[in-house]
Image (cartoon, rainbow, N blue to C red; front, side, top):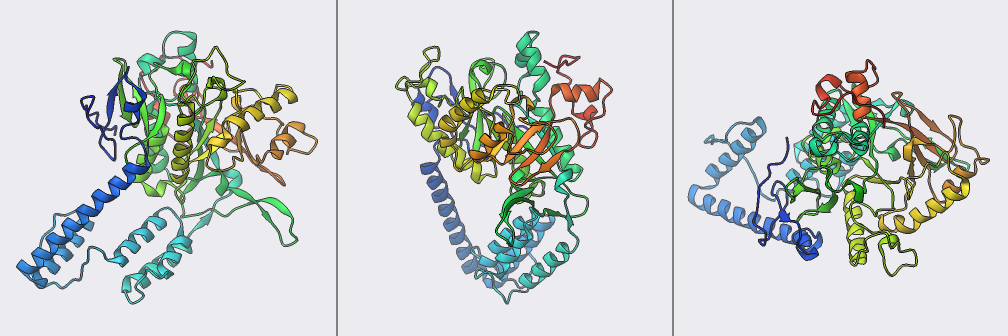
Length: 504
């Protein structure tokens, strides 16, 4: 379900938080773009409003106790709690005893436990129940512990070598402006996925028992008893019938050449610090909402927490030559840089944008997202000379890595072009050795097979599957059968696409 678009007159303080929308017109200054979209102060404002509401509610309950007596208000609260869980309207049951406090720490704790259990973090749930915040005499604590232990006995370990990895590019909001009868439009039709297709893919994979995990959940470098470091498989335990998968999105840069093409044009933070997207429609009106993968996936996981393993979301693969996440942060936009490119439109606010991107990537990390290098200039690492690859990697390390909240160890190869063949990397592979020296340990190419995972002493390699226009069309109208383990393409394929869809 798409967010409802609700207009506000320009000049008022628009807000986007939860289901509210903020809108502005083009042709305005940068100051207006920042209104209501900075994270820190507005987060405190949200907290203050919540506290005032809670205090007001507490006062109302206190007055009701005075007017009705403890027996009646307790019974009403108990009935409301019971009926809320069953979806019924609240009613009172005279004579029923209950003790309900608005600030009941045990209730809050159990809510945290339920969230952890729903996302398969059973150890965290047990840790919470054993902590100081739990009322050990509350029978619900022992009951919850017993339930968790019973579930843990049924869990099935996932085979990390049979975990699929799907990926997308920037999603298409308006196919009429994207899939034009031009070379570029045909390319978009080939490699991009529409918003309705992506939403249908999420729904169908969820219904089939798929659970989103992070690539770091598959394996990590650890020491054995002799002190030797090696990439080792990790245990992913899921209930019977559940299947782990990894997701990534390429080119989350919102390139200049995509402006006006019917797609989102940047990611930003709403008033509560949540990532949303900016989108300009055909009339030049700018909307803030769910126009690309990140906010759509966030909403889906919010509604279906069991779709995510311990809060994992997607990997966002970034190039650097046009900046990142829709902001022109690269040194080629900086007139003060010796590497400024006069062919680029200078960004006079580049330091402000860099600071905002650091805030944004930190928020995305806290939201469950990971980041990957997609090269600086979208270069074919499998084909270019070693020295050219080194120069490109160094530019990414200089211009993109400092904007991320943690060191980046994931390489998602442009064009899926690996620096090695199917055999494990060796120290004789100079390209691999250079990437490893910079801390890269997780490497992703492209393959149409359901899964391909390989581990070595210091690396994990995983092939990815493109769920784009070309791949969807090949299953929908081309007679292929590559995606039936994931989705029913007949109910996913967007009929607004020009067909047939070729590979461009």
